[in-house]
Length: 266
Image 1 (cartoon, rainbow, N blue to C red):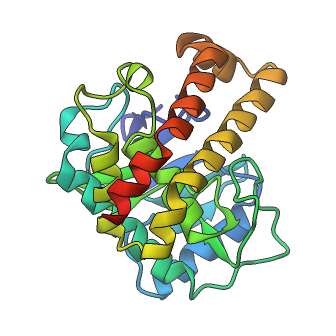
Image 2: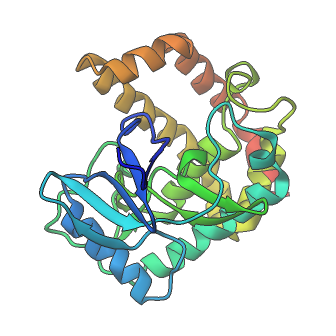
């Protein structure tokens, strides 16, 4: 690493492989980088300025994007990232992304990753991983979403459900305590996220069930990675309570479905 380079904290997969070089960010390129870069450029052309703009691909399989300055919350998540205003701003940012995305045609020839994709599919490209590590903040409010590696066609509601899993979070209190500040009211925060997004009444009624479906998809994703012997996911599973934790979360979601629906609709 040269004096002009700054190593940045990447996600679980890209830890230690993300660098800033002045106004550029360089990281491992996803397999569908060309299609993804075309999509990001189209978002910019349609007026969405809250995502990195692609600059190019290197000969050694890395991608270069514009660097977006700001704060990114890393686990264990700090109090500033879990305020009500921060949560509301994430909903608003996701709505802005979706309003632009519906105007951008999805490249049906591209190999969009199925890992966290909406099982029902869709005509809009969803981000699928709007977690705290992938949102840039300034002055306590979200200003950009980054890391579109898991983007795939789906429903807007699926993207909202995925975001809710991470930001509310949609976890039983015991599981949430490992990474989140204490005292977060899941039902109240789910309502704040939905209000920030401007979710319709029909989608609010469906959201708790879609969150349960998204949680099952995430569990299957982890199971595939663990079965393949991926050391990152094997370690994370062991450190975060194993499959018992996943069982507990899924039971908790089903047991509280009526509570979440009431909070969203009343």
